[in-house]
Length: 411
Image 1 (cartoon, rainbow, N blue to C red):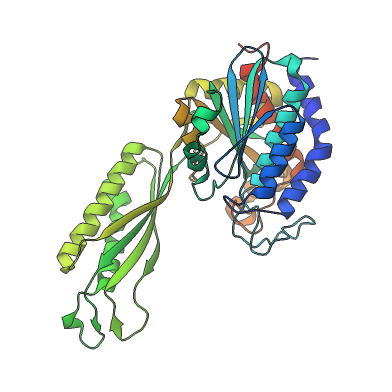
Image 2 (image 1 turned 45 degrees about the vertical axis):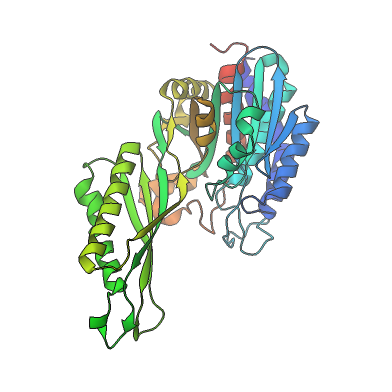
């Protein structure tokens, strides 16, 4: 029996404890930077399996397992839930009103723990150092930076490769990889524009920020349609416009909330410059009495796989799962803060997609062209991965990717 066959059998045996733990975490979701029970579960299990456990960024947990000379592999799972009321009707549905694991971070945690236990139990099959990192607050883009600010880069061995995965509503049992961009950069912008307030019956005495905001919204539609190279991915969404509180008062300011998604740092910079130019120009044209204010927040870095590392991990997945289960995924429009961690070390990384929808359900939806309408997406109150094979696949994927570098037969 070769290593990959042994791995598949070993991972299957871990489900006996993984499934109850997954259901426990799903039933007890915790929001970002408050993942105390989840963090404790990760730390307690890692310590039992012989990992050197360290804490960073409040609820962040890192387990380090040294096993002789060799490369250092860092594998990361995010832990936080979302402020979403669960509507799945699952037996193990959230017991916390208004909070739910709607993005499968509970499954990420249990899959990484499963891989960590497998590696701890099979040290004769690999050499080097395995670092299992459990990150808080991915949903608010705060967790990875909180761990780095708390000394992560100096507090653990420098990894030679970093690994992460995400469960998505694609076919269960499959793995999607791609070189280059896999998740978009994401930026939220709060823009405040100023007017001059007046009575609603005296508009000539005002500089109306409502009209100003409306003109800005319309003009911003040209940033992608007229200023971005055709074929270059870019999204600009105005998610909120807020001004005034009553019908007969012209307010003195308006607030706009924007969200950007890009696969290119150059495109991102170009869009931000265009947004600021347009806003300032419209304010000047309206006679705004103050300069506009720009606040950048919830900023997610680009997630872009190292091509060589992606090829190595993809080849390992193909050996482990079979060619039919591994495909090249299109870049996702969602965003992540994982890449800040390997970037802090100057380390290449690989990030892949794990499917979660039962094969028959997914294929029927594909044939009917109803994937977007019939299959709940991440962050939906109805999002619920099929526990098996999703958990089995995610665990095997984490262990397989690590052994592509640590395995005694790794090239």
